[in-house]
Image (cartoon, rainbow, N blue to C red; front, top):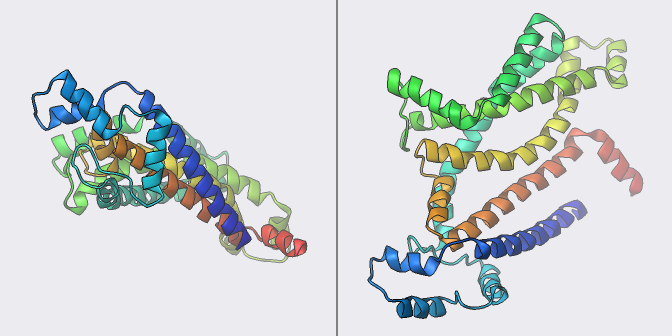
Length: 313
């Protein structure tokens, strides 16, 4: 409970710091949201009317006053209204979050299906021909940008073969190409990580002790080596989840998939500051929450941590 309480306090401090930095940076960005908002509603305006509108919206207040006003709303769980849609920002982000989460989770499944067998075989057959091939494939996968891979998939599977839709959302087929694109890009990193982690674990003393006790190789691998090797992978997973969610921004735009990423890209182009600010905090809080779960999972995967905590008590 102490660890959980400590992590929650860190989450609150991080969100406060993130909100301040992102708010200041957006205010320094070029562009006039007041002029855009008046253009959006297609109203012929004069400079005096635009200045009056800025005053009404508080855009002329000092940055710290604007931030305090925004922070007052935020502690009441109010992220403001979108300039584009005139709807609450949280409602807009939350309605699109399941789509982005769906791509993220399906990409993780694709990544796992690729990385676990290839990384395992590569470690078990170290320096054999199959190891060289898997390492070469992982290097190629890491070097290929995900958007370029997505374009290849669209050209081959959608345009030439006509098997899968290249854009939009609606059926199971719509999520396949975005998920495979992101999954392949992520798997390259995890193949190499799993291979090196397994090789290091297989050389540990407790593995030699298990062999000396007469345990079968399959039992040693599944219940000892593989489980222990997951610790560094889960560490990287917590960090890479943020990059995966960030990667969905590019993929959602490429496949015209209506998730949070596509919505935020439109918001950036139209200077919709409440949406951008809300997205940063929404995703920042989500990624930190995942990292808290990762920290807590160490206690289950690594018995040494539990023993050290028991000794302290």
